[in-house]
Image (cartoon, rainbow, N blue to C red; front, top):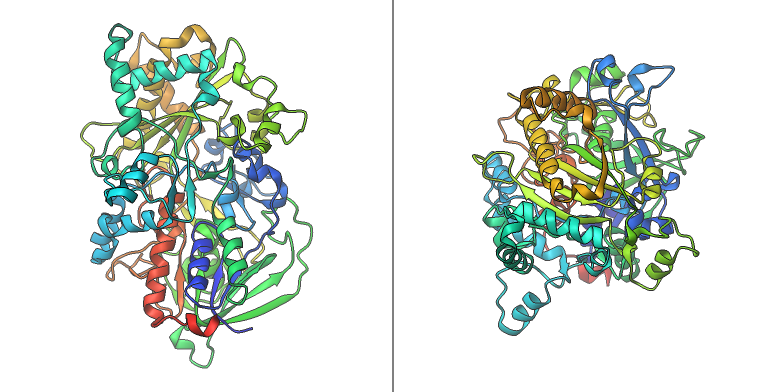
Length: 630
C-alpha cells in the first residue's frame, strides 16, 4: 500500500497527529516499536507506577546527571554498569507500546503557561505560536467532565469564560474527594495543607474555610483560562486523563480512528525504525522519501525483554512526508543515525555526515524533582486492604472494576502551585501530596509504592528550569544501542546562578512548615530526614539541603533536543512549521521541539503541539483528499 505520511512513534505527539491526518483523508502509516496490547496494569490509574515498570511495554534508559562518576554515584538511585561505568546511571522509564508514555504516565493534564507559547512566537517571528491562538488547540482536544456548570452555560448561553472544551477526544476528570475525605487523617492533612497554602491559621477558621470553598469552586482548576492568564497560585485540584475510572488518551483515540478509517490509518507494531531513506537521485536536496525498520519484538537494547537483534529489515515510502515522534531521546537518535546532527557526534560514532545540524540532541532539558517523605504513625484507613495489584481478593480492585473507588485516581490528594520568588511572573513550583512512598525512579521503585500504607509524600516539581546543557548522542552506528544521555545537572550545566537549586530548597522548607499543623500524625521524616535539618542555623541547613538536592534530584520530562528556533540560530533544528532545517519532507512532532521546557507538566503541551502540527501539515498538503478515501 502507498502512504501519504509515515509517523514514527505513537505517543503524545505521534498518536494524535496520525489520527488527525487519517481523519482528514490521508493514508497514514504509524510505526510503533512496541506492542499494541494493553495490560490491566496500564488501565488502572492507581497502578501507573507499576505500569512504568511493566517489562512488556518498557524501555529502561539509564541517564547521567553528572559527568563526574564519583558525584554520579552519590545518588542512592544510581545503578552501575559493571563492564562500562559510562553506561550506568539513573533509571529513566519510557514506554514502547501503542500510546507511548501516555500508557504509563501519571495522567496529570495541566495547561502550559502562556509565556511558553509567546516565547516560541517571539523566537520565530510567527504569531500563530502565540498564547491566544495556541489556546484553541487545548480546547480542540479537551473533553472536560469536571466543570458541568460551565458546560451548561456554554450550551445554554454560548458563554464560557473558563476556556474549557467539552467535546474533544481527551476526557479530563477529577478524583472524587469522597474517596479519601472519609479517612480522618487524610481529611486533616488536606485541610491543614490547604489552610497553609491559603495563608491562614487555625484561629481564623471561618475566614479560611470560606476562602477555601470559593477557591475550590472558582480558582482551584489549573486549566481554567482565567487562572492561566492571571498566573494564579494556590491550592489546586489535579485534573487527570481518566474516563469511567480508566486511563484514557492516545491509545483509545488511535484505536477508534483505525476502526472508523481502516483504509486510511495503518497501525504497525514491533516496527523499530533504524534510519531515514533519502532520494539518492538528488542527494544534495536531502529529500526524505521513507524509512527503514526492523520487524520484530523487543529488539531495542533498552527493552528489559531484549534477547535478540535478529529481525527482517523492511522499507516503506511516503508520498508526502515522514514525521518523527519518538520523543526527546529517540527522535535525535534517529536523525543522528541518518547522518543529520552535530559533526563531532556523527564522526565519533562512525556515521557519514549528510547534513551538519549541531542542535540535534543538544539543549536537553528536564524538571528538577525531589520528594519529602513522611512515615505516619498509623496506616491510612483509606488504604486498608489495598494491594495495589489486579487481585480479585482486593476489595478496591473489585470496586474499580465497577467504575469506582480509590484506584480510579493516580494517588494525588492535593496540588499547590507557587512561585519560588515573588519577582517572577509564572509560577514555577508544583507541590503535590501522594499517599505513597515515592523517592524517585530506580529499578523496583514501584514495589515500594505498592507496599506503602503509612506514608505521605510531598513531591516538589521545579518548572522552567534554567539549565539547557544536556545532550543526547549516539555511541555507534548500531540503531539498537540506546544513546548516551547526559543532563549535566545544576552547577555542571549552563544556568547562570543557583536559582533552580534555591527554588527546590525553598519548596522543601515550605513543605516542612506546612506539615507542622499535623505533625502529631507523623512518626518521622525519612527523606530528606533529620540529617538535613538544622533549625538553629538556617545557613547550615541550606547547605545540607543543597547537597541533598544536588545528589538526589531527578526528572522525567525530558525535552527540547530538536528545538524550534530562529532562522539565524545555528542551533535551531526546526523552523516554525516543525520542518527539519536543511531537509525536505521531514518534520518532528514531540517533546523535543520546545526551545525551552514548558509549563508544569509536559503531556498537555505536547498534545497541543500535535494539534498544531496537524494544521500545519494539512495546510501544506493543500485541499483535503477525503473524497477519494471514503
